[in-house]
Length: 278
Image (cartoon, rainbow, N blue to C red; front, side, top):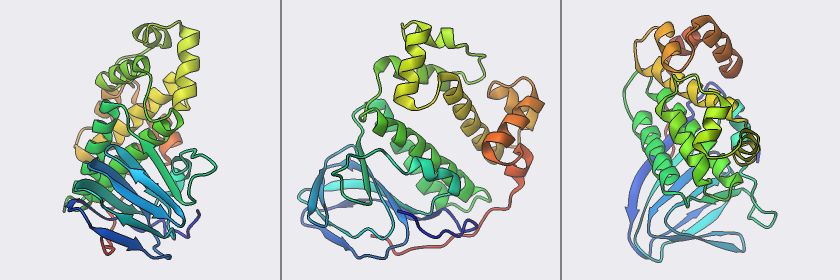
């Protein structure tokens, strides 16, 4: 569902991590202008979209589009994290999780069956919430970065049914653990105990990018975090994420992010607007 966006506005609008007692209910009227991202940490809720009612147990990650009315009933105590946000234009491809045709309009969900992925998304959502409420000069930018990583992984998990093949999980852990290593596709295939061709096919099918393109995305996300959260030079950051040639790093960063590393670091922090929470 498309909305009109002021791209100069703060992306994270509001959010919370909270517990609710049994019997709690909530009703969202039409016209709410923000996306809602939520993760069920414990317990379960029932969410009704029109005539369709969906059970949301522990480990459910949901994304509700703007202007989507719904109601929530809490049959048992539960704990959840939620965020209201306006997406950056470049996030559009991350907001469609390939839901079944009979899914309620304006609602995307994925069951986080893999424990490691659930833990990672929980950490990122907590980081997004904490940074959005902090007074750090780059707090909102760091919050956006954490949120973007949630959406990237969520869209990949939705495409793979909520859990990644354990062989691919091993590869992703290896990539994240040593981004500076000059990985070759054959080395990654060996970690997955697959032939190079079979590995490349499986990885692209499940994650939507080739292994080395996905690795580059991980490197750029880490670089964004280092640019905002440290005073390291661009050369140091480039080397730390696997680019011994800082000029090549800057060229790739500009192409993928839309601005140079220095411009990304120097863009003034944006103000914060609040929305009424649930």
